[in-house]
Length: 209
Image (cartoon, rainbow, N blue to C red; front, side, top):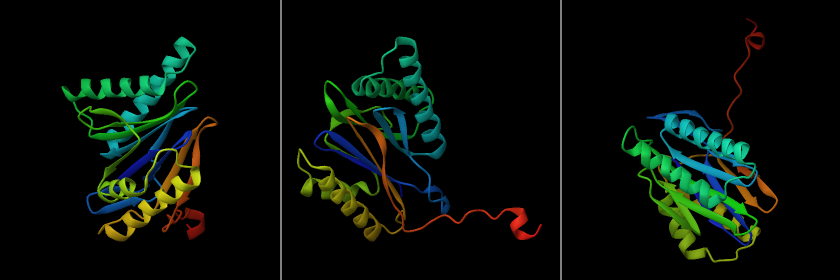
């Protein structure tokens, strides 16, 4: 029951994701961060099969870093999105990745931007987007409440509404979410919304072993 969603505000992009690592009917952990930092001003939020998600997002992250290392300048958000789309399209005809992505970034020239990339390599620049079962509720709420030029406070209020709706409406709802923001000051974690905390694994000495 994964859910990733994001929206563009006035000079920033906010992205939120559930933090559950799930396989079949089992929840392995509830603090899995599915929003990866590509560079100082870009995030990629991904949903899909755990192995594909981790492998593909790390592959994109390392290639974005390699480009900057070789050329001395970072990729723009649009260039990073098109590179990601190209890699998904290439893999689609060989060994496809079951990964859906929201790529968020902020550029000095063009400001904030959000790109929607699905597992069959469809790419769109959007003001708001969502993946997963929670998208049924997020997209309807964002259609109703989203407007261009939202402040950070308004955007966070809308994100919290989406999280509350997901947790109250989905049969198997993810308990925890992480919220991240990217603006002119860089990409960073904003907050966690936790209703369940993972219990730390007891060490052998604590058990008297």
